[in-house]
Amino acid sequence: MPKSSQAHPQLVAFDLDYTLWDLWIDTHVTGPLKRHEDTVNQVLDTYGEPISFYKDREQEDRKVVIAACSRTHAPDLAHQCLRLLLVPSSHEHSSPMPKPAIEFFDELEIYPGSKITHFKSLHERTGIPYADMVMQ
Image 1 (cartoon, rainbow, N blue to C red):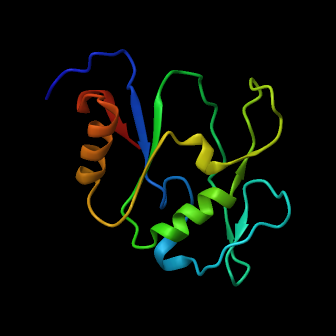
Image 2 (cartoon, rainbow, N blue to C red):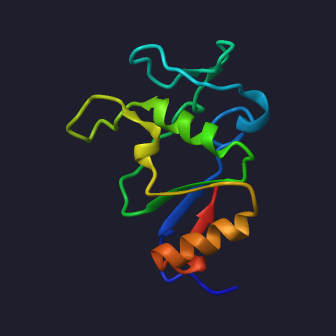
């Protein structure tokens, strides 16, 4: 396996289902989705079932590409949820206003298929070597 050229990865990719939220978006959620006013970290499906990110962890500010990779069969629903789900900005940023979750991702690979296909696309678009990419 090639050795990484960096002390830290240049790209971190997160799966959505059971990594960022506690469900499978394509089997546990029925659209359309909605957010009640400016509620942070919660979106409701058509039956009022809540969708939210797991509680956040302390994040370091690094120059890292953040990607969302999901092989869901409901990519439109996943995109809609990421657009509606509000996430608090980190305390170091000037704006205390929450932002749509989708704005925290530099790259999106959300469609049926394989994580290998997702990583190939990320590699082609970013030029980042595979050895400098990790999947969470």
